[in-house]
Image (cartoon, rainbow, N blue to C red; front, side, top):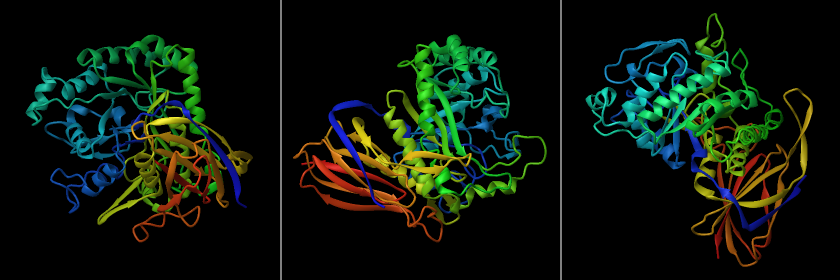
Length: 500
């Protein structure tokens, strides 16, 4: 059944401007993300630095603006000083493997420069100290000092000028090495921020946080004036201890708007504490899928073989694409407070790109980033959507209602071109979106670009790299003040309107 939605656009009302960093990514020393992922010196596909050229090109294509590194849980026991200069392998206590230590700060910054992305370094607030964190800033950003001299000795005469830093990862959680109470965390954040900004007062600092008023009240009242960002994380579907990923499309789509609820909660917390407009949200780890790492956060034997379930491409389908588009729409709607987001991770695990010996596979989520990064624009134009809803099974097997269509209108402030995102969440039914309010002669032609596959469980793999891809169609508009666009089932569309 083809339903109809109506999107009324108010072109004279701009809600705000998005920060392009919401299209960022994340890289951790986990499974095949670094070694055999972005960094593979033995591969014929790698450059002289050991970086996969095909991965770099794919990340350039989606204009990756920022990459967060090195963790994640990995960072809470990461001795960064052993990852510059002379390298010695060591035992990684997070993921219980030997870390070869051949990819460190120098390599990360070089990789970011090759991609064209800003480096975002997450510091060790678990086993580390404020001095370690501030020394890391010195190594990257100063002309003088012991660690600046060490950088020069390592062949990097000019400072790296790393602007974005985070104090800690998920130190609020019992699973994290160096977990802290709110009071302990507030004190550590204060001392760390103080020392890091005394090394370089121009850096922007984030702290690991959660959508909890009491937690943030303690931390921000201690150290809020030294901070620029609060970091939050979210994963909404976990693999089983047997390495089996959740499959049901409706069950997954039921969570499509939960990230927005988290954003709104944190926004209200910042407002209640007087920091709205002063601190921004960095949603710096997020994905529909949680990583498969059974038993790694508990005592006992960890099964490394089960991690391979992360690299089964059939686990990632149109549910991932639709969820990802709804997440990005949520960031655009709340552009006043969300300034960065980092899809977790860059490659492999549950990432948007899968690497293999002879090339890469672009998973459905990659194509969503392609649409948003290349075909949406900086101004968020006010719009009002009226969409029918439908019921889906939630995680608790009870019915929940979600809108069939999600939409955001964007405009290029320089050219007036429009990019309207239309996400059809329904797994079986198409929907027609009637678009009104743009003016009868404003636009003469349009292009639709749609990410879709034949079925909700369509996926890309080595032997079927384009089962989910971008389909392009041209539209001629007789009246741009009132026209319709059909959105196929389980699809993500960006409608581009060119000024007439």
